[in-house]
Image 1 (cartoon, rainbow, N blue to C red):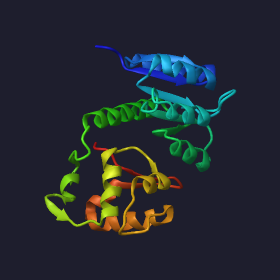
Image 2: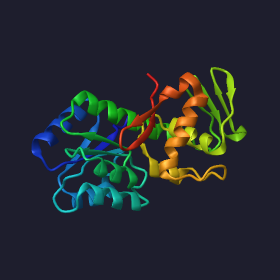
Image 3: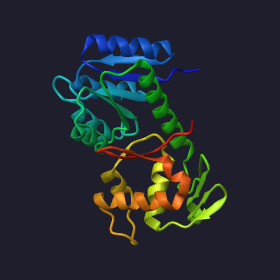
Image 4: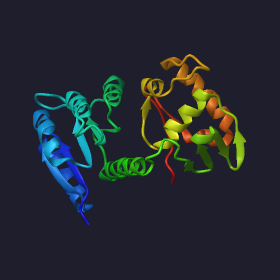
Length: 232
């Protein structure tokens, strides 16, 4: 069986070694590059299944690398996890808006890193399986049926507006992934409510209320946005 390929983009040797050791110990095939320009060129050749991308890089920084990879049809679908020592919300939000799948702030434990890697790979695998737009989503005690615009929680119907339904479908369809408010706005174009980044918070409040106890699965990521809690 072919190994899953992961590209590490990091210019600090100790962190490179830490990442490579832990990833290879878990049977991943690893390629390490240490500059943004090299990452852009090598990604097209190596075509990794996942990229771990440091934001602070010499030359083209991680945000520019992410932007260029997402603009290239050959690399646009590769999930990217940002690595950053910056705890500033603006950098994280910018990366997510550019198409990054997740982020990890330094310092991080190998266990957390591997958990995030596995979660991102599960999401991309699930996305490939769900090739049809009307794919039914079953997660925890929630069933979402797009073709019938129907949601059930523990077997009971829950009536949602068009916008609430789209927000739930987006979050539950990729559990664990962080979505910024602007990403939610871009994905939801409802006629029943004027969707803006601020009104997303209102939609989430209403959605949680209608879902009852299942509303706790929608987690707030402070200063950034929301995610749906993964199955345990």
